[in-house]
Image (cartoon, rainbow, N blue to C red; front, side, top):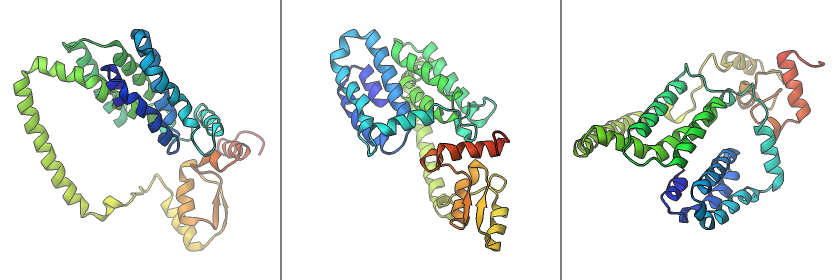
Length: 279
């Protein structure tokens, strides 16, 4: 998004950093598909409004398209990720559409509302491409909750200048600057104190497991009884059970999905869980 922001300002040099970023991103997390997708959407939108820029942007964007092939599996990784990213995942909560009546929904609403008000009341010239990208990423959380950060980052980087200029319009820049300095200074001091206090809490450096979400009591009893065997389990519990009971207890499914289990085993798990198919 920062590279896109720079390019929208006419500084296309940073586009050459995008292929390098995507190479690393590809080898770290499958989410590079969303980043590459946003970059390609920007490319066509920017080219539509700035036809003379093609000489400066086509080459680095073309490299971005081929950058994901730089991985230990080559094209096989791309086909695998496209396959796994385009099928329903009813067992994974953050692959479900965002619910407006939730903490995430409230945060989304606040971000959306502030951004739209900034666009409407800003005295600055409104550039079509950043606003178009804002509109595209605005829809993503309704497809999958895990795409909410993309919308948030887009709003902060591409729309914040409209929000700032709208605030300057409402409040004189001198007053706004003074108030901002006081506000951010106070928040900085409070944050530093909170960080020092929390650093002495050992639970800060541990993953908290909440009773009710994971079967901690049942797992504790199984561990004490030293039972070994195969265990049909909920998808979200798989890796938790492996950590505490493996290798004596083997689970029917866990979050690694297709990277470990065959398609047939994955389907058998779903059939068992939902009472479908031939068992």
